[in-house]
Image (cartoon, rainbow, N blue to C red; front, side, top):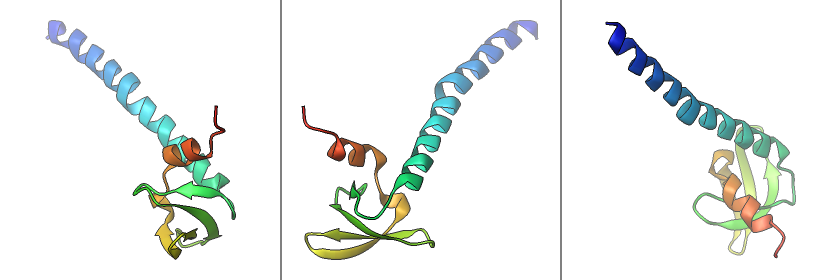
Amino acid sequence: MQSFLGPLLLFAVFIIFFIVLPQRRKLKQEKNFDKSLKKGDKIVTKSGMHGKLLEINDDGTCVIETGAGKVKFERSALSMEMTTKANAPAK
């Protein structure tokens, strides 16, 4: 029984440090991104649509102005990674 306890404990530590903690960190970054959004920001959705944020609603939706017109999206459809890449200064 004791020979089985060591590898099990090592596996638990591996799961915590390499899966659970990075996932928590990413969720925290996404919450901060969601809170920092304001009208006029240039954003990109997870499906790749680019636009300018017109409205942020309390029901979890937002209105984006694109080349095709105004489109209503869920706020969870906004991509933090693609938006930061699109807004990064050119080198």
